[in-house]
Length: 364
Image (cartoon, rainbow, N blue to C red; front, side, top):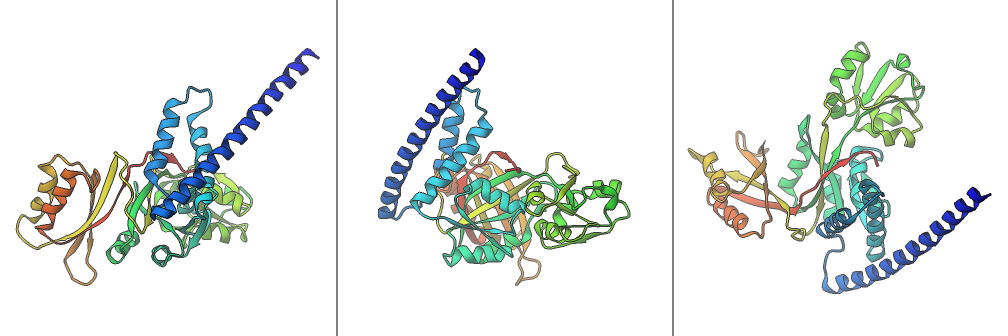
């Protein structure tokens, strides 16, 4: 009896703590509503990535345990998501359909209280945000194994939308089927990128099974949900959404398989103090031009984290460069370097300055 009484006492204490948490959450919500009214009056952005990162870093830094930091961040992701919904209903377009890794990235960035709207293509995501049907969009831009997503880079040539945040996911691929048995599989469906990322595994484990490209991992899961002889390479989330069993888990060839996603919006993000800036530019065709375009950054000690080139569609043998650098466009050295860069370029376009991201796991 004494043990049972002790458990009951502890449970009563937990109930009291839960009541206090509920009371504090509603107090926080009231303050969020007040902030939302002030933002609206000042025509300020409701979603501020730098403020979110500040909240996470402060709380994780103060957490004494035993509650784990990863779970703490997930809880506050949903608290912030619900709070943003109180300030203003948030619509976010993403390159869908549901259960794709872009969907998972959107959920991790905006939480479950945001209205996530799947789009059939990357241009459609840009169009939804440009027309104001969604406040923000989420698109893939780079995979650590397969490189840049060209469709996303091409859209920045035509669009005036800004990069306001980024999400970095560690991507794991699952082989899914209706039966869950490897020996039943006669065909494999997936998007070309996951297929490429699992090429060695497929050759070793399903050497004579045909592999078919489809529009997305979610489309592959949909097809397989109606065919007991087929399998899909998709996310773990797809298995629950489409009623499939996991045949094998984490079949990607590279252990460190990351995909980077961009959050796009109509305005520049606020400075966070630890930012990244993305540029797009076209250089003049002159001797030594590549050296000249990098010199403004080198002489100021600005670290360039990525440089990528894309051919101009309207002019043969001419290229657009995409550049990521450490710092915010408002920093004096960054601003001066971009000013010097313009002197040797046909045009320079600032795609955005936004907070750097930390690595996040892909499973929600």
